Image (cartoon, rainbow, N blue to C red; front, side, top):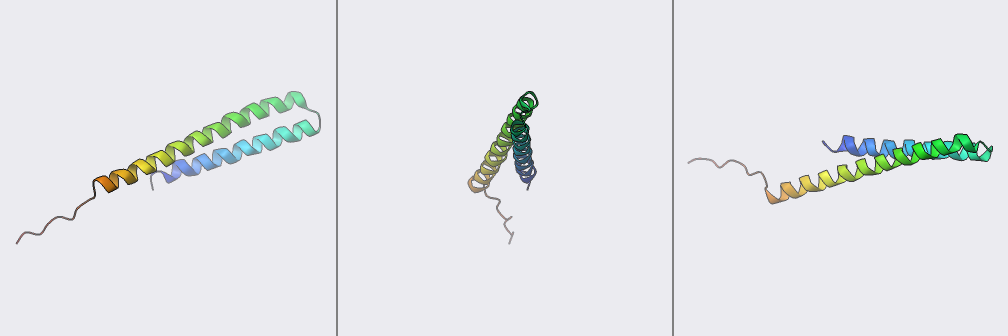
Length: 80
């Protein structure tokens, strides 16, 4: 559960990056090219940050699952 927040944040950043791309595209349609390129640069940076956050969250989850398989938690043995 610890890694879900990172993964959710990564997807949120990817969505915000796409919104910046759509905004830049809308600026290009009405020939506001000087306003479009900063939005495109910001969109690239935000999108890239979201992808990196997703990679970290997935890698952390895989490492945790591997750790759990290598060293399972054993129930304490009963004394007779």
